[in-house]
Length: 78
Image 1 (tube, rainbow, N blue to C red):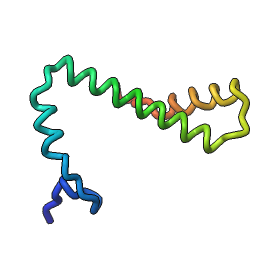
Image 2: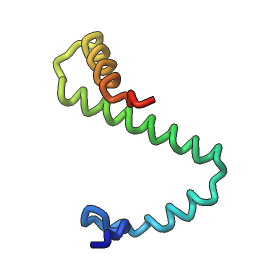
Image 3: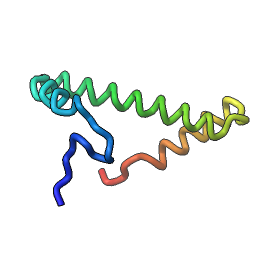
Image 4: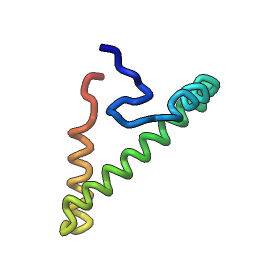
């Protein structure tokens, strides 16, 4: 069974090939900058989701929980 990445998950991804073309032409520094941007966005979304899950926590308790959850997500293979 062959999986077409352009429709992975059943959702059409019409810009996938174009995105790959653009990424191929980036310098290593630009690619690394993209990685940092994606990581920052993921952390923001994680924080938003955590706040929605625990809306009644005060700021100090929320920050403590956020840091604990981030620690659990950290890759310990290195």
